[in-house]
Image 1 (tube, rainbow, N blue to C red):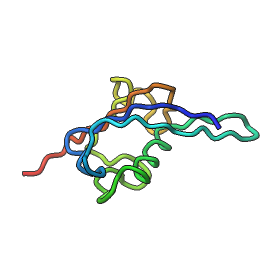
Image 2: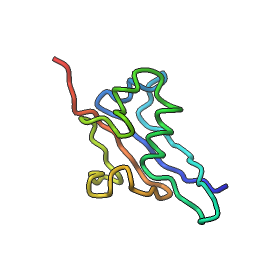
Image 3: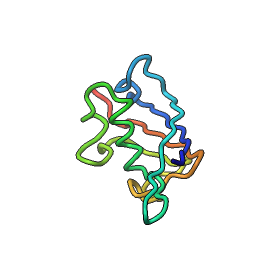
Image 4: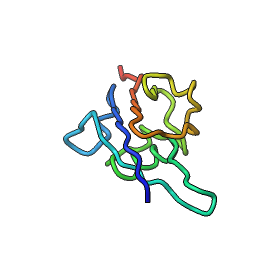
Length: 107
């Protein structure tokens, strides 16, 4: 099974949803699924699911809504707005850098 290495950063409060010590930067290794149709690299959808299953310890509804990243969280892929990259359908490349920043603030 092949693996993909991705750096993921959290900011603007999203890091508080993660297990203590609430590290802002994580080096992740994601598996590639290999099947009859060839190798399928993980996309952002797979990354978000991995984060939800392995890094978020509570209140996942503050990070995801349905099967998407919650509105109000800015997502950057290699310093580019994910809307320009295909959002959840963006196929991750080895050494990609993905950032999640909450733009929502209480008052």
